[in-house]
Length: 305
Image 1 (cartoon, rainbow, N blue to C red):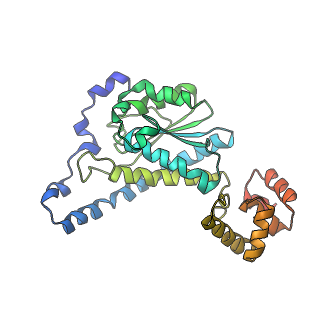
Image 2 (image 1 turned 90 degrees about the vertical axis):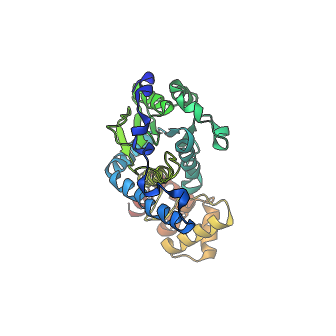
Image 3 (image 1 turned 45 degrees about the vertical axis):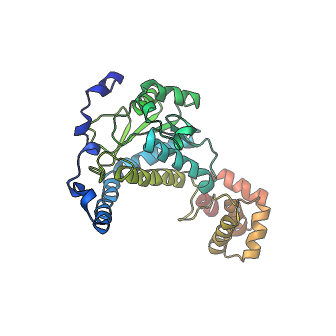
């Protein structure tokens, strides 16, 4: 869709802008009934994510392939969509001990837009490209352009730029592709239907987007070897809660006491993954590090080869 074509979109016909008959008398309902409407409608984001399962799986494998080759993952969006991308990116380093630049959130308006609305910037088609250029986005990277209504020029500009470079371009929207096509290699559509509050896509659309991003980033990190079973073996031990989690992981997976676990964490400079290889294979830190390096950082492979 070209920059000028956005004017031709009849926004009232978009799925995310339609009036929801279930909430047509919202202001006249009792508070209990009002909450009941939300509870009923909030079952739909799960259904929407389930409907996009195949596209999400395709995206996870494609992104992981880019990151394994040295690329980075960028989320791009405006308003709620952009803030959700920033949130997911910010949660990756403490959860998976990933480098801050590995997953980046790019929000129209930058950091100030996290706290103060700057939705007018979403209309700038060229700003999507320029913001990615400022981050060093290149052909080896992956982009997820997030736009609930699918029409955001800022996101379209970023996706078009990604495709022009040969980077991986993934679109995520809550309207059918036939309503609003987006320039992309993989198209994730989360069809949550009309909002309880007409047009307020921070509601069901936002919930579905957060769920999809949770799956996307976690799935990618699993494929990168940052998870063993369902444990965060690359967790950064930076506070008492995370130390306790690390000690429980070592206790469960290496059958060591908490005191032995503390010794292992000290010897491994706080690396749970390295400590597990040391304990399970009776190696010192240097030997365990060599085994992990040969296995590409994959703990399951390091423990079985």
